[in-house]
Length: 182
Image (cartoon, rainbow, N blue to C red; front, top):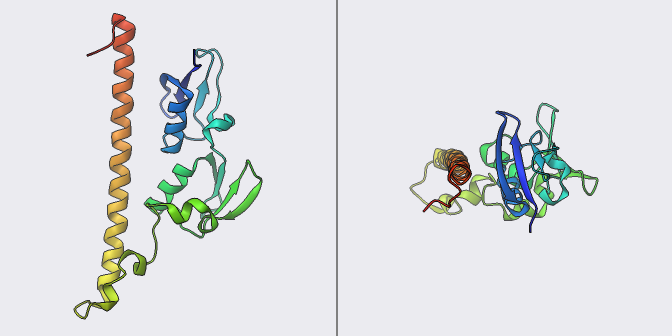
């Protein structure tokens, strides 16, 4: 039988689980587990900080613009921070697993990241070729894309919260009735 895990969200003391480690990996990749959250694999008898579980791949420290170190966290969180504009491609990150320090734009995931915020030429490659375009069109398009990306991330977080609520209610139903909901 697979080990069941629990996640304790430190921000509000809410517990999620039981869930297999594969589900915790998904939550970590989706930036739903913060560096301060705790996990338990022994039916909530003991807790450890989530980044200490190597399988969650929360290996990144972020040097925030104000000099504060955030983390360790996952690539998913780095992508979310990029999409919301909290950091940019010049931000320095430290891989605690490999003991390396680099800028985000030098990492393999950055080039494949759909959430990255890039220059206007990548967002609108044909705008310069359009004779009707005004100089402000490119800037407005870039701002609109950044706003849409932030909205998308907010909606994804909201969906995640609703998903977690449904899972919690489902688990409560099972515990109360002993039966699976239809």
